[in-house]
Image 1 (spheres, rainbow, N blue to C red):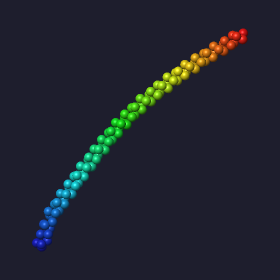
Image 2 (tube, rainbow, N blue to C red):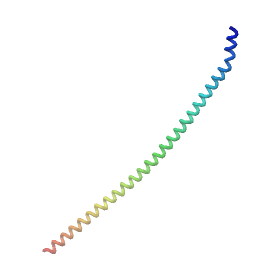
Image 3 (cartoon, rainbow, N blue to C red):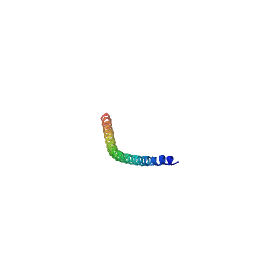
Image 4 (tube, rainbow, N blue to C red):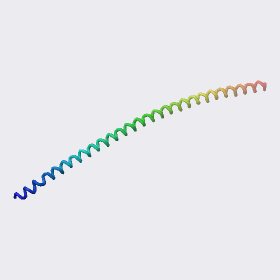
Length: 99
């Protein structure tokens, strides 16, 4: 029985080293995972900031286009009104020449 205990006791340092090594590897894996998750968070934040800037720029551009279209519509309406007025004047002049 003493030989069995000697064999068991002689393996205790190897088991202790294995447990310590397993814990260290687990700790390093957790640290690596934490660094990876922090990097993902930074990437996501940068993506959100970039997307927000793009949306803001697109909004400004859309507003400018809508303002331009509104001015063009007003100009077209004014042109149409002026053209109708001139056509009415021409029609009246033709009628007055006939009389």
